[in-house]
Image (cartoon, rainbow, N blue to C red; front, side):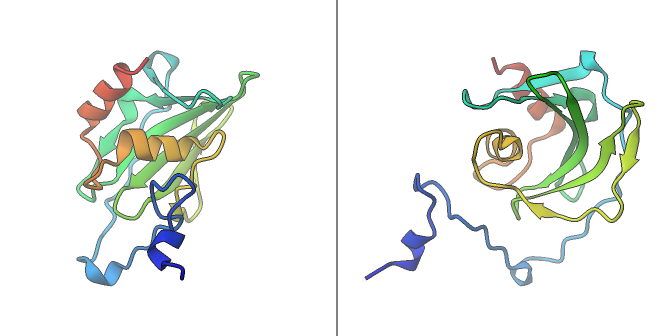
Length: 161
């Protein structure tokens, strides 16, 4: 006999393989207005400690971290490949639904290009270079499913090796 609850756990037994969320059991959530921050500068980048098997370097722009009344943590995210190529995103994370949204993507001219009709997406599960999962689990969303204050997130990133 199989138990449905056990069948949904991941291979490590940490979390269900799917994160189901039924909005009818909560108050109607409304997203706050989003204003893009200034483009990130290297001096403001805080490294994100990743798994030892990951090949990407991940940074969060400390000056861009915010948490609006909708409880979404938003910040500029920099993903650097082993060759030094960078991708820059302005993302938001919803802890209660395990979702993220990319509002804008950085250009080679160091400006933001807003995403047309950005959509909430499920944070992908752990795998090599699953940087959004690492950020979600280790930095943004705690056991109570709430994002830290911008000051707490900056402090946490600064205190990591």
